[in-house]
Length: 169
Image (cartoon, rainbow, N blue to C red; front, top):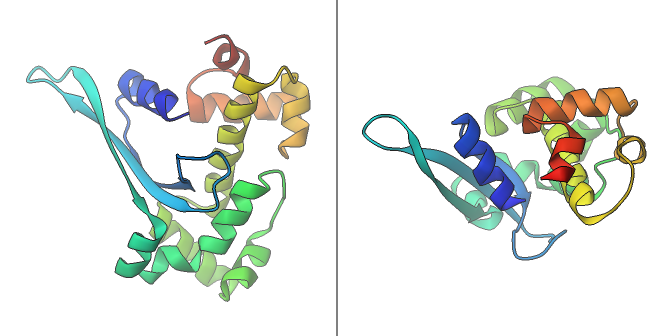
């Protein structure tokens, strides 16, 4: 998955900034890290590489309680991406009102909780597309998408390719 991120950054030139995810040393690790990847360009502006770094959530917590406040919600999203948690439920877990939760989540992570969950679901789909023979339609339902078409649209938006293309690569 991490090499796939490199390929996407190389192909699109779009950085991945402050994405919260499971630690890379073990799939499904309960330890969370904040990761970023940026394209490296030569003097002519061509992308020639990718620079990336990750920080343990504990290190992030020591700097700001913003990310720490959301740790349980983020962990829940990664452990059970198929769950359709509402903003109100996520806010309750964080001890915030729904409007406080929505504003704070967007400020801390640069996207809404729904957008973040979508990325988590697509990342889970990437792992399963690579590791299993499950059909795309079955994955869509198992990961909480409305249907195959919705899943494919969301996957293409995040990954820049269809699930079938991803599996082929």
